[in-house]
Length: 184
Image (tube, rainbow, N blue to C red; front, side, top):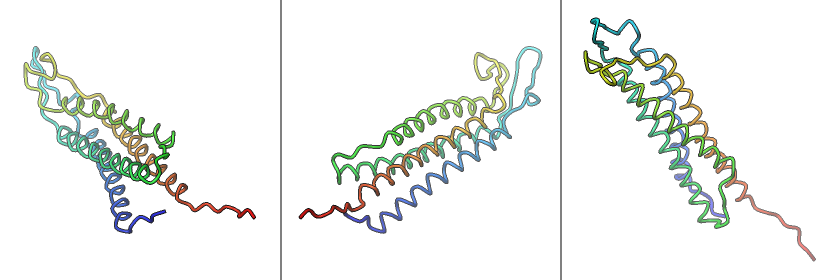
């Protein structure tokens, strides 16, 4: 079989490292957002209307979301490029069941984390008197929302990297030369 050029191997490994790095950055930003989110003592009440100032968690949450989405895109691009090149070599190639399951988990994790981060981050934006977050009422992000998102990011990142490694291992097993005994 054809050997992958060293330049392609470097790009492949570099892309995996970038994906992991972005996922860890997103994880760290979620933890920072958990610490910096608005707390009950930040809430101002004038007897009728509420006010919450903007929190640093707003910017941190947006940065976490962007880095997480980039990590997911890069990780899945590597995975699908690897599967596509495998299929070009061997038309019978099928993605292993566990790898497919991990891909499903990664996309479900992305969806749930995306929703959690969008909602939590938007609640940390300034909520002026009479406007609030929803229907003129002020809302605080529940403690642990960002931390839960951080855990989901690690699960999703692990699923993507795991599926990549499973496809690499399968590819290497397919490329090992088969030795057959001669009949004679």
